Length: 160
Image (cartoon, rainbow, N blue to C red; front, side, top):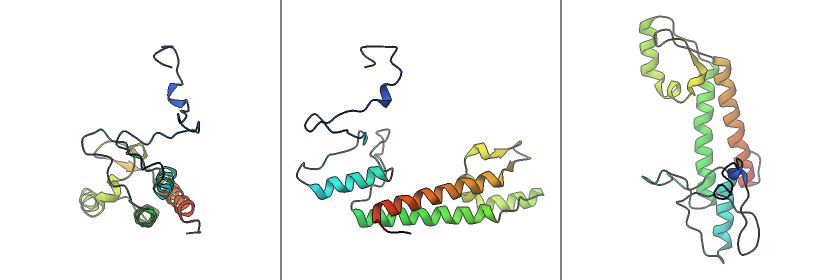
């Protein structure tokens, strides 16, 4: 549509239909290689991947990253991500901001992986007087844990 009508703003929101069956299609990314039409197991796996947010998008340089090859490896992958999210949530729930410069240095050495994984919008102040909104950090990781748990439930059909 954007080629026809340059003022058309919602071109990304348009649904695209399968030329064969007329059903809606999903954008799986440029690195996606479709399975054989008759391979229903592979197509169901692609559906599971898509529903859990895993697609084949990349810049083209190094590919889309790790893509679980079957349902069991997908469940294992999601559970591993959940463990990381829970670990981050625990850190931020018990966090005490360091006061002195030596405490800040020790904190960065010991906890940089937690500090680095938090979106920058939760950090305020200058480089020397950096503060983190602990409430927002806890909310962020709580939401991530909840989201991954619902993806696990959707994939397994069982409660976490």
